[in-house]
Length: 94
Image (cartoon, rainbow, N blue to C red):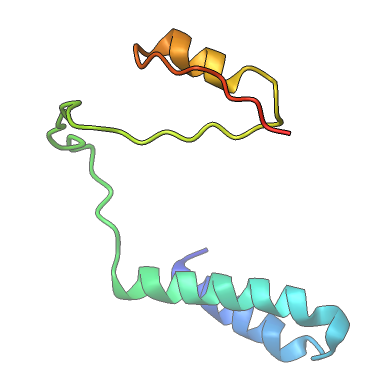
């Protein structure tokens, strides 16, 4: 079944389906498929076994900003001072 036949079948299905609250989802799915097939009909994809293209690497550099979110007194400051060399001291909040 080609794309044109699929489009015609979906249009017939939309015409047969009653429009009410229970069939809104089904009609939406059909309309999405119809749009996809029409797009394929206008712009056929090149199905070739070509290469994926040239890749690239991203250098890691610069500063970063990190946020640790959690309950009080669970070790966020201890973890951060262990992982980094900032020398943070835990604060006591009441």
